[in-house]
Image (cartoon, rainbow, N blue to C red; front, top):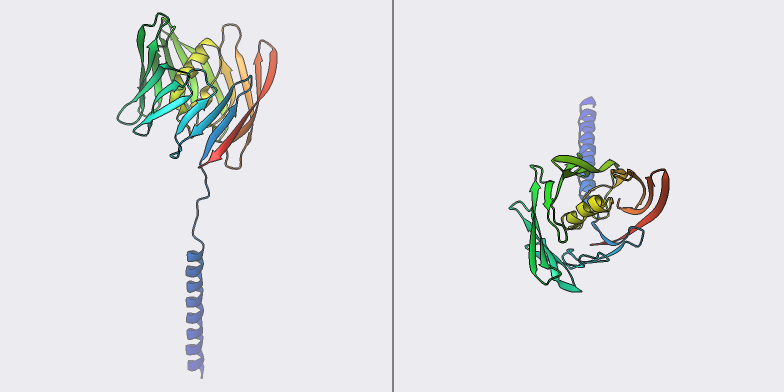
Length: 271
C-alpha cells in the first residue's frame, strides 16, 4: 500500500510540475516585451524676444523647412545628409555642407554675390576628433575680413561644455555650460546641430548669446557667457513632455546686477 501511495504521489508531483511549466511558457508567449518609446520631432519653437521657429518635415522625417530664421528657410538633402540651405526669398545666397567618409561635417561653404554683384565662395574648415565631435572650426563668413577660429569641449554626454575663440594666439572662453539635465533637447532629432553651428559661433562671438541648444543632446540648466561689458549668467527651469522632451522653459538672465526673465515654449509631432 505504501508503495502504491508513493507512486501516486510521484505522478501527481510530476503533473503539477508540468502544469506549472506549461503555464509559465504560455504566459511568456502571451506577454511579449514591447518598446513604447516614440520619436518626437520639434514642430514649433518660441525662444522669446520674438524668436519663433516653425519646422516642417517630409515623409522620411527629414527637416526641409525652417521658417523664422533670417539666413535660410529651406533645406535640401543629398544621400540622406543635409547638403544645402537657402532662402526661398533670395536664392542668390546659400550655404553648402560637406561631410567625410564617416558622415562627420568637414566644411561649411558660403556662396553668393557681394554688394558689387561679384560672386564669392568662403570655405570654412571643420575639424573632428576621434569621438566624431566637432573640435574646431575655422569660420569664414560674408562681411567679415577675419576668420573666427573656434574650439569646443564636451561633457560625457556629448553636450558642448565650453566654447573658445582664438584671439592673438590665446583661447578666449566665450561660453561655459555649467550644468545640464538628463532630458532630451528640443532639437535632438533635427540636423540643425551641424546646420546652425556657424550661427552658434557667430551669435556667441558677436552678440554674446548662447544657442548651443541646437547642438546639445540635453538641456543646459546653468550657462555663463564671458563678456567684456559684464559676464552673463543664464539659468533655465524646465517642464517636460511625457516623452522626456523640454516643453516649457523659464529663463532668467543676470548681468551687472540686473535680472530679467522670459519664457520659451516647444511643441512636437510624432512620426
